[in-house]
Length: 170
Image 1: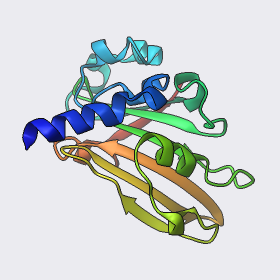
Image 2 (image 1 turned 30 degrees about the vertical axis):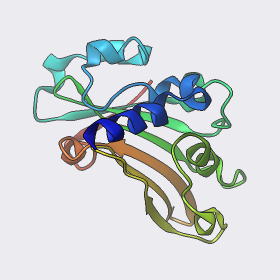
Image 3 (image 1 turned 60 degrees about the vertical axis):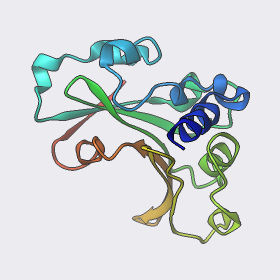
């Protein structure tokens, strides 16, 4: 059963439709040094500045790491804790562009369902597989709708949000 689940996870994240999307090719828990091969902005990471108690959130344009996708108005967030990738997020707040992340998720990860595509829908859909926590959500903050995809693991989830996360714009 574990072998089947492992093959399914491998197929899910490395199938041809998502292969050009390098942001899905970095596993949660990967060392920063290895992740730098995909996310060049991680070259700025300095473990001596942040230590083991703080996480750093690097932000970049998602389209730069997912050629051919529709993520033109989406930010990529890569969260690093203790020199490892703790989380990968996609965030879009472009109110004129609807369901940009929804369409990406449906093609590359799994179908969040037709209800989540509706303009006035707010909430989250759990698309977790194996050891990966994958959440698709839409939320309102100050009259602005945010569309979010969060990918992490049970071991790293505590390091992906909160006051111990420093945001860095790249």
